[in-house]
Image (tube, rainbow, N blue to C red; front, top):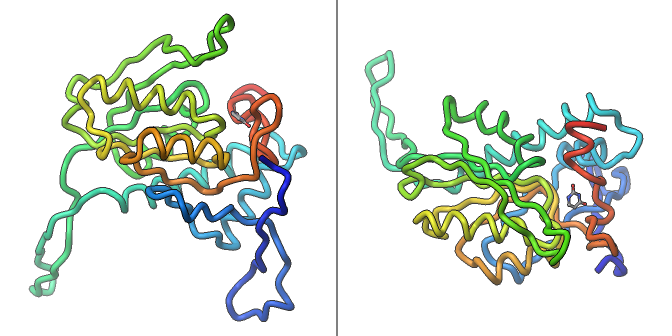
Length: 243
Ligand code: URA
């Protein structure tokens, strides 16, 4: 991938005519892939992504702006959890017909980069349980290999928010889903939160685990020969943790 013209859009507030808005590259739509939910390509989101994609953005800003996108992903992800009706009484004695979340959730981060998304989840879901999965490419076979996992005992009874910022080939995410399924989590109870996906990774993932819902901020152009997402942002874990 990566050779066709990327989709572009006029970006700016609605009161501005199109001629007064700059053109920016927006997410590929991926209409043919069900269960992929791409965040609305708002001026805010595009500005935040511009900050974290810039190679001249230092670590402090990278963390700050990534965290803002992660927060948007978590907030949108929560919209995919079921609710039940919940009527309450307000301080002025009137009733309000509302809803509340039904069921228990937990987070599962794919180490190391996925751990960057844990705080955003905690900020929205106080004291949420968070499990971890470590998957690394096996040097000999070049296939992803499970090195470590630690998951809540009762994970089969929870909705799982799977966390990984970059969906490149989809190999690690697919293996993580298989681990969750082996612990009794139904595919349809898994929600994958992702910052940037490659079109090929997103398609492969959706084909192999069609009931897992994906919430992503952006579907990029493609992959390069080293399986980096392009234009991408480089190595997310390095930029967030060590660069
Ligand atoms: N992981 C990253 O951190 N970056 C990529 O581009 C692909 C996978």
